[in-house]
Image (cartoon, rainbow, N blue to C red; front, side):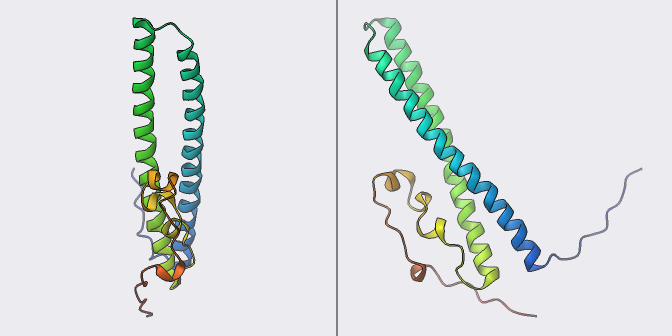
Length: 144
């Protein structure tokens, strides 16, 4: 016999904030982990390239280099794509929380996050931080 659940009453702003902040925390952790993975793969690439340069250049070495390069490119593409998605969702959550609060209280991803202009721009220093005052005005909340 299937149990029929009664519809949930509308959640309060406080409950919604709690859910959003929990999601935000989880996504921030994942983003930080993926950033760490990037540094780990960078160290592995340097080690593999050092080993590769010590080998005699024959067809086997060239094939190894091509395979390593393909793996690195695929891994980097997947990791950066996921990081961009995470950053976008973090900015969305910040905006939602700020809208509920009626002021800009969460601003990191919107003002300083690397995903704001792209990770390459951030790595090259072409992603200056915005100020809180430069953020767009929040929609006005209608109080019932």
